Image (tube, rainbow, N blue to C red; front, top):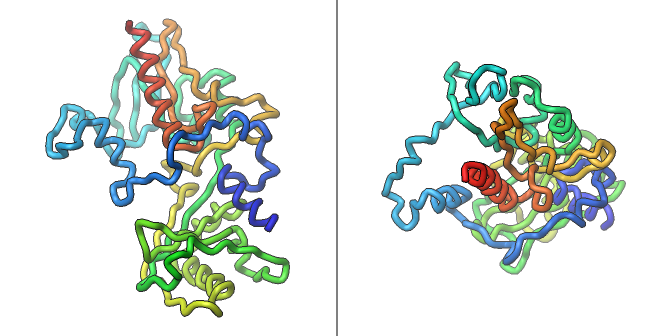
Length: 315
């Protein structure tokens, strides 16, 4: 049971082990108000954009903002203080296109900043910004969704929590011990959701679907195969947050390394100020929230925070 709690804690904090997590995190984190189980079911997070762009209740109405959104544009460099007689920021993309702006708001994940900050900014960010990027911890948690041809578990079941023992260790499949359970999804009655956490979460992304499905069926049948007739799944969907270059991980937790280096989300959120004393590059995203990191509402709130910062400046 203690081992399961370790893994559940690692899932909440996207940590390799709970020994990597600072004790200050649970004290500064503020839980979102309301029902924690609310979801948009089949609509997904695009609902947020639809509401903000006022496409609901009339999704057919096109707003001018639609023409301002450019997809598949990988940002390679942000020249934010070139020393020239201009206050403009120049954004260069991988396809060679450039965009000029008075200000920009960077909402990439902390993982992307960790991987690319040395080449992303011209000139280099100040030392406190670099310390926050390097010192804050961005871990990996992944999901494995298995869809079955029939629902083979009882209606009142919420899932299976796996309690591993020393004798359960299976050579060559040790990563399975970092799956702490499979759980039902109310809106998808034939799907089980497995959580992969800890040190092996990123490594599992490199395995094929066939290996992952075969291994998941191995442990499901090992644990509950004597109680249920379990068919093979007819579909699998997996998250691969760490190997995706647009994310490079899942979400932030306050780690021991951050405590040692005094790296904070507040420093990560601090704008880059040009020689003309203007906040030219602003930062948003869940990792920049000092109290609601790792959450979608924390990410959204930081976007509003930076927009308000610019509005107040121009006032």
